[in-house]
Image 1 (cartoon, rainbow, N blue to C red):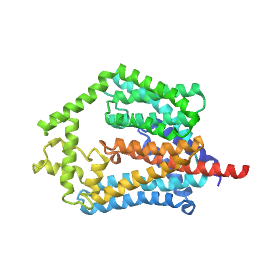
Image 2: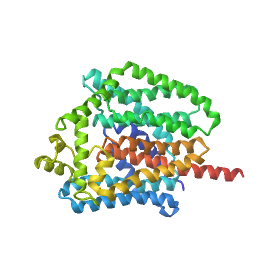
Image 3: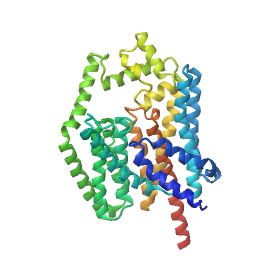
Image 4: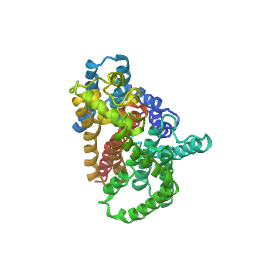
Amino acid sequence: MESPFWLEWAIRALVFLFPITVATTGWGSEIFLLLVAPALYYGRGWSMLSQWEKRLLLGYVAVFVVMSLSMLNAEELREGGKALERYLRFVLLIPVYLMFRRYGFTFGRELALGAVVAAMLMLGQALYQVEWQGMPIAEGYYHKIVFGDLAVWWAAVTTLFAVTIVRSWKLRLALVVVVFMALYASLLSQTRGAWLFVPVFPVILIWAQWGHVKAMRKWVVAGGLAGLGLLVIVGTQSEQLKGGFERGINELEVFVKHPEAETSWGIRLNLWRNSLLLLKETPLLGTGVGDFQADMKRMVEDGRSWNKYVANYNHAHSIYIDTLVKGGVLGFVVMVTSFLLLPFIAFVRVVRSAEQPRERFYAVGGVLLIAAFATFGLSEGLWSRNPFVNTYVICLVVFMAGMVNSRKKADAELDKRL
């Protein structure tokens, strides 16, 4: 079905602008709402979806329902309502996805070009904050973790764009530079968790391209350039990178001797310990999505917490521990299954059979998205921060709808030729 002219170009513009603005200017929620608004009218056609699409989308509804049920154990209803609003965004991706599927939207190029621009602007913002404003680390618009994680994510999208869709070697070389601009921006934020994903995404890309023999020689050259660029970055900023990991090790040593000390890892470990203690009280449905900070304050007051600084946090600094304590075992199982496992399986299946570059771009992009959030989520409460939720939702819609729609277009073209 052909979409209204204004709608197609409006969505194109929003998808392009999202990577550029989500961590630098804080427009992520506004862009998400602008996508949802027309989708509430144009997002129709549930019956045209395949069974796996329906199961996956209903999984997002299931997470929202289970996390809403956790409110039965909650006392801070106002805070719970704010937290549920983020889970509602996962449900609202359904009409957006239906709109993309109904009109056959394939806007991966717009997302990738936005990632390219975002990489350059994020480096500029990072240098401005560190070199001009004298800040110790780059924080972007929100927070250093948001900035650092998303810089690495857009580097991954740019790399994917270079090795699947782009055909010009000059442009590919230029994109190599852009990738390392994004990685350098992340390095300036000193976000250690973001760099856990840095060695992961090249492995996924090589795995995805392995069956395409003609591309292997290109991969050798691209891999050599990437390795050389990484060595340059690490060499020029080794003190920052080494310093970050050394501080992490020192903080772990401090925690063993003084768990009450205020350190980044010390607070995380205390949050995780306290969360597991709370889980024993309400194992099935958890303590409720809005009660976390109140629970931390209560544990400090009654002496169960080793660390008083945990009272300043409303999430457990890990999507796994955070969901487990807030939504219980049921919430944890439904979240991991719906947000990570089911979409990962869906994308991997298409990667194995995809032949066309555009189809591989969408399928591999989906695998990268799930792997990135699964990795970032080890040490950060992604579902408690709007920029991460918006990024996950919008990228999932673009990759999944693009994957299905590009395959249908390829099949239709093949039918015409035959």
